[in-house]
Every structure is written in structure tokens, then in C-alpha cells.
Length: 191
Image (tube, rainbow, N blue to C red):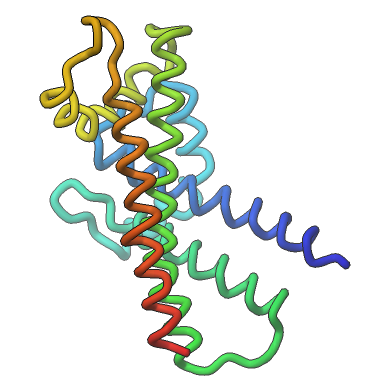
């Protein structure tokens, strides 16, 4: 009876933290500016853990390792808590290994969904408010993914850019084929 409510609360709490860490990692990796409302919100949601973690986990070639590790830990805690609270029972070593690998797959899936959302928001805002406060951040986060498509597929009629649509379809195919296969493989191996 209370399972949907408990799941909602856990998904909201852990999802907010996990996606904040993942968004911070993506913004740093893609060199997106943090001097805007989105950057300030991401920093506020993640500084409490990232700053102490940076003392223990170094970065590598411009990638913030501490933020990525924190995103994985948050995802692992999310899956573990859901299983403990909703599934009950005792867990053995293979269950924890399953959660560890599944957390990696879930982070890949979350990153792809994050990219899909950013592409959609950028496309909509490019029509409504192309010079808004989020334009620089959204452009920085999507440019590396849209540029190769734009080199191959020119704008239709000189003005209609189909590259966001093509990227979303490709990302959806990645979610459907290899990511779903990885999920199944992890669950099959550790059964």
C-alpha cells in the first residue's frame, strides 16, 4: 500500500543528488559555464560532498573524478536502498556486485537521458529565448554531440536544423539496444 509513496520519496531524494553530481560532471567535462542560475543550483546541490571528496579523489586530464565517483556512490545507494526498503531480505556478495555494476549502467542511462533533456531544452529555448541566461551552458553541453551531425546533415531549407532530432533518435537507440542489453547481462550474470 505504501510502496509507491516510499518509492517516490526515495527516487526524488536520490535522483536529485545523483543527477546533480552527474550534471556537475558533465558541465565540467564539456566546459560549460557555471556563472548562470543552473550552474549555481548544481554547485549548491553538490558542493557539500564534492569539496571534501576532491581531497581524496584526484581529477584526471580535466575530468573531475570525485564528482563522477560521488554520482556512482549515490546511484549505488539509490539502488541498494530501494532493494532494502522495498525488497527486504538479506543480501550476499553477488547482490552487492550486481548493484555495483548496475549502478554503472544506470549512470550511463542517466547521462543519456540528461543529454536528451538538455538537447530538447536547448532546441525549445533557441526558438523562444536564444540569448537567455542558459544559452551558453546548453550550447557548451550539446556542441560536441551536434557538430558531427551538422557536418553531415545541413539545415533543411537553410533554416531548419534537424541535428537535435537526429541526436535524440540516436540516443534513444543507444538506450534501447546496448544499454538494455548491458542491464540484462548484469542481471543474468549475477543471478
